[in-house]
Image 1 (cartoon, rainbow, N blue to C red):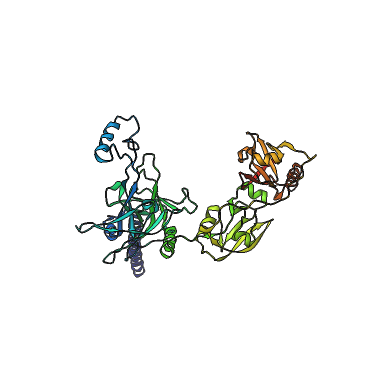
Image 2: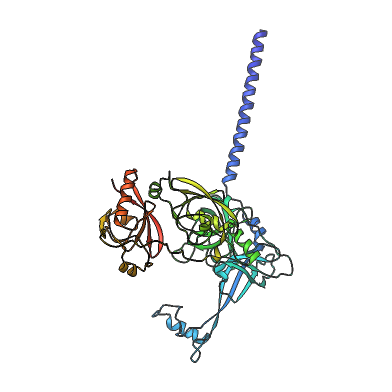
Length: 502
């Protein structure tokens, strides 16, 4: 009986332990579910965030004197429009009439910006204030107070990133916002855009980061794409993260009708901060300059040069400048710059531009099947002289050598004096000119066209058709599937990997 009682007691104790374990597991599971729900839920309200950062967001009004135009409503409605007479009558009543049809008039434009220091520095887009005679800053009123207006002066501008730095003189310290780290912004993160859309005054819109590292047109582009509503007038306004830090400057939209369709672009804050620091210190930008012309490395080019895969930036030309002084050569592939791997041409341009003028950097290049490390002292991009120096070389003798031949989809011929004149080539230019291209060939697909001049093949200068054929045979014997060519069009060099066929 005693043994049986002990057995029952143990059974009861085990059951209690199981119950406690199950209850504890349920509690833990409930907490996990609640935490996950909180992580993925929208914030209950953005009002506290807006209250915190809105005093630093400003509306910008610019005024410019422009020449008046004769002819009534031109530029307002299309010619022949049924509203043409109405607008002509309106302009006659409110503008120049009769004797002074071209009298200058004052034009206004609207934009947005934000304060970045208590002493009155303001960031906006360059296109918001470009050409303005007067700039007026309207501060967010808040607390039922009237809006405060202050004149602003331009400290500096950077058209390349469309950033401008302004300054106002205020009687009291201004509320300001700080820049965040745009590199930590993830696709899907919540963001808030603020500004003056369509001249309607202070406005807030919310959305998410739709994409990162977008490039539109500029060499230094690094845009955050967002679906937060951005319209005309939002330009120059801030894009905030949920901590109230500026991660972008609203700059452009993609739209078929001029209004927001959920595709907006904000220049990343990590680009803006560097530009603003230089504008504040120097009143202008001072970007590093390497001094090379480059193109991306394709699969075909990589194979033709004996690389394991496409990476880095291929140097097509080295004019007089820092790179030439540092020993860089045409056909080098820049793999690393100042300790950072180079992904492509855009990556190299941004890294060089972000570098300090006068800094000596290490540049690792792929050359003739192996890597070499060079040291280059950077110049200043803004002071760079455009256009590379012309290649020098001896003009080949023209005589009994073969003057024209067709292969690989190309009809090529030796450069003659007449061709140099017709193609605007230098008197001493040498190489082979492409006379025609088969539109069904791989050469056509690679972009080769009649009038292009082939100056190098297989990383060797060529002057005759025999030189070209020798390089083709050498490439085939080495097992290459393509031939590495340097091609010049209107003097501009680029590299092409021409398929050799089976």
